Amino acid sequence: MRYLLLFFFLLATQWLGAQSPYRFQRNYGGPGYEYGYGIVQTHDNGYVVAGTTSSYGSTDGWLIKTDSIGMLLWSKVIDLSQIDVMRSIVLLPDSGFAIAGYTNSTSGGDYEGWILRADKNGDTLWTRKTGTADWDFFYSVTATWDGGFLCAGGTYGAGNGDEDIYLVRYNANGDTLWTKTIGGTRMDEARSVVETSDSLFAMVANTYSMGDTLGDGWLLRLDANGDTLWTHLNGYPNSPDFLYDVCDFPLLGRVFICGEYTNSDPEAYMASLTYSGNLLFTSIPLLLQVPGTERFNAIALSPYINFFGTIGYTSTLGWGNGDVRYFSDVSNSIVATTFGQGQTIQNWGADEAFDITGTRDGGFAACGYMTPLGPLLPDLYLIKIDSTGYTTQVLGIFDALTPASAMNVFAYPNPANGQSVIQINSLSVLENRLQLRVFDAAGRDVSESVTFQWEQTGTGTRSAKVMLGLEQLDAGVYYYSVMDGTIISGSGRLVVTK
Image (tube, rainbow, N blue to C red; front, top):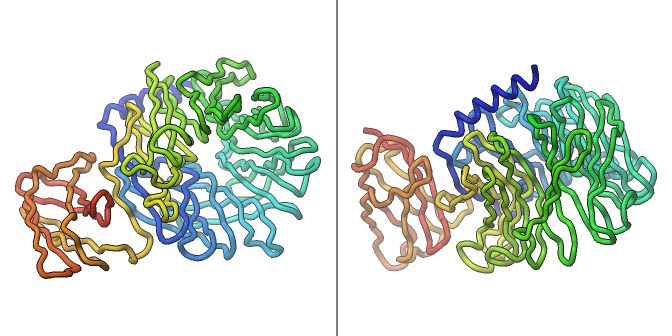
């Protein structure tokens, strides 16, 4: 019955995938560091990203929600007093979320595994900290068939020595059902866990105990009690090799895994195995092998059958200094590309993606970090990839956490019928290089359908007005960006009525 329901779900998502696919890149942040570690598409086709921010003091947990084209709807900072990191998120049937990570906001200052249950608005329902007398971390959470959760990570306070895999099973109320450690005398740490369609678990870890001492990727199949059914080591002899993510392919009874292997240089890696442990393929195609460091941090399935996407990091491809690496197989048509802010200006700061999820339009959404202006600190980075495997910077609108941005930009009247005015107030003297662009809800540039009349008077002025003629636009929601050269200095939403 479970597979029959899944079959109808896939038919429904095929139909949903016929809609026009959105694509965009957005960054969100303040004066500190911001990272996105986990992403889900919500039931209303928006996105929620879990990560961290240091813009409010110490490192805090951070949840943001956007609409379907990346406009920020709400932001929640979860501060337990010290260092609080959100690493993984799952969407629940009631539109709420379970988020896992780690925190040292404890009585003794040691790190503990941290799980939080939030409602659809990001408000906390309950939070739990679980650990030993030493440091403990959660890196992944999966929802279980009984309404509970399984968290996976590492512990230094239990097991066979050094760090061991740490598993904690919770019920729906956050009560601990059981804990489990797995590992040898060296370091072993879980990175991702998923409940598979048969109500068992697949988990990827990195081990220095079971393979060579430089490290190997380790896939483990677990039963409902966390006991090991079988394991599979992945790696080259005498080289550092790692696995970072696992995803379920329920219709065919298999899992996909990804990470990095080292031959002469670290290379991006993926593989697929059946639920019973048979290796179906292991692939480091020539397309993935380039000089420098390459890795896949996450892998996900699109709602389409046989369509997977991987995301990670490249030090060689793209514009340099590190960019996001994307690779997918769209109905046996390979797509391999890079994303990052360096595509606009060479040698800007590094960019990397940590998680990816399939979306209902047949594409993917990914999150990580990007460095917007070289010397500035990283921002949380959200990338929407369409069903062809590509994205665009058309909606590269920056959402600041604080009002201390260089420009304050707003539209009036808004909603507008026929005409509107964009008011620009700047902390510094405005230059003649300012430009204004307008986009529709699908991310298409419609600036040619809008008339612009700039008013900027006096020497050393810090404000300007732009009269917009909107007569050629249909009624609907539009977005505008004020460009200072190649930098987006301000943006907003404009509703056009008729």
